[in-house]
Image (cartoon, rainbow, N blue to C red):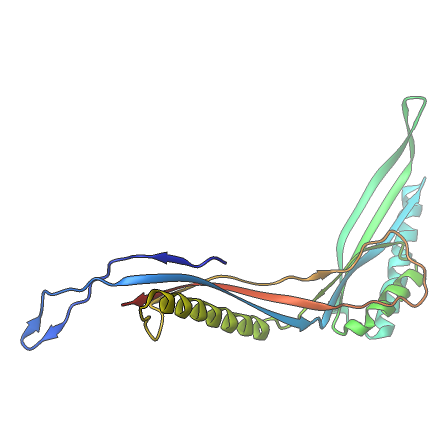
Length: 230
């Protein structure tokens, strides 16, 4: 962020015996931006996977898809994944067509059922994917890593952002030969964000040991701060 110097007028009355004086003073303000960044290890994974089934007969497609999804869910239960961490995020039934000699020819039905699975232990991510594929999953749409409690890291980033803004203001004040107030007269939080880490998306994966490394997340905070100076 680029620091910006601006002049504003403020009115301040002085208290005297018997009443308020009419005298006022003009103050100048210094406006700066500060940014803070904190790295944190991901402790939660969100996995979106499912089954896509295509058959000429709709009932057959529905039954096979439902059986495979049920097998996947039961396998996840056996791993210790609670029911509240497994949710249907998409369910679609589509008619499929081929084009033969320029004509649309009905081919069958496609049933898609996607599950969103939350892993409270990122170390289980690879096993969850493998178990799902073993029991019929043929779509791995995404794996996203995040922080279950980002507030502590956002507070750290915000503290760093305020310190950065103070450092900028002091540097500018020293350069100009002026002094700034001990505390800012106005602070505005512009942003505080934790960006999840998208891992990958795949159509089909082999049911072997899948090494998955979540890496580090970046938590950012940005503030806009005004100081009086004289």
